[in-house]
Length: 250
Image (tube, rainbow, N blue to C red; front, side, top):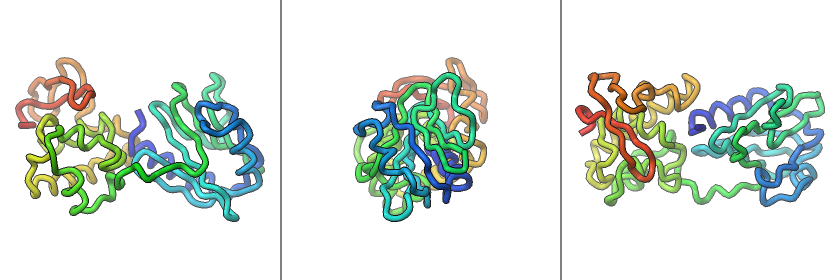
């Protein structure tokens, strides 16, 4: 399931391989992925322009276009990926595609059809990026209230980019019980948690995605903690299936 690391790798791929190429046409016929746009609306807005700069906050990406053109927002949804200069998906999973004048293409490839392609995407509801949030903002936005710390980390309006896999990995790395009330963490522990967030994001981006975390093999029934060998516990926290080590995350 794409989280911040997958979105950042997709942004990097666009930055390396899709910028400064002229758009010949856009396949925006999937009205669910391209909602609220009508078929042809994104094509008309982007045809003849170039992608000039790729950005990301949390799991959301957007690409600026040249000559005062509109911003193109891209979201990977729950199973999407960005495919650049590949043949069209034989299964029909390319839900949105840009054809470049040089013969290449950029596609939003999404088996589950939950990704998005939209002009001028709204970003005001997103909190600061989880990898860039300052110490003061992290303390203020995360360390309050009775909500479980895992739920607070996953709230995209609080900080953007952390999903279910990353939250379990981060809290295991930080040795914090995911059920613990966010407001119960003192400032020094919040500061340590923020450092763990940043380190975990750097590591999983480098490795290839949220699924590469050290704790991920233990996220199953009767899983074993990679550090101490205890059997992990499993429960719903913040509405999401959660795993943690009962011996270390106290």
